[in-house]
Image 1 (cartoon, rainbow, N blue to C red):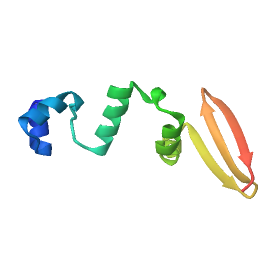
Image 2: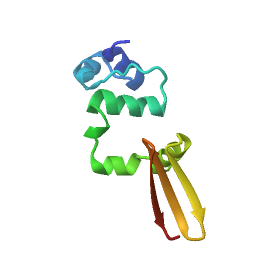
Image 3: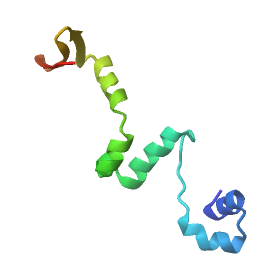
Length: 103
């Protein structure tokens, strides 16, 4: 389908209305029409990459919990708890950094 056909089909526009709005349509070639695919295409195809997102957008949409979980799952970090608090162990290039904070 071309842009005019999409406008006519999806929004019930007449041919004349669709021709006037044709430049307003962006067609994404998505493998799967999922929210992930849409978000990924928007960030990478329209904006450029995540570095172009505003700080507010990054703070609002970045999933810190999932990111932290993936760092632990990758083996790069280990979280330990004892009676003194929580320690974060970071093993990068065989250097071990330990940071503690009380609970």
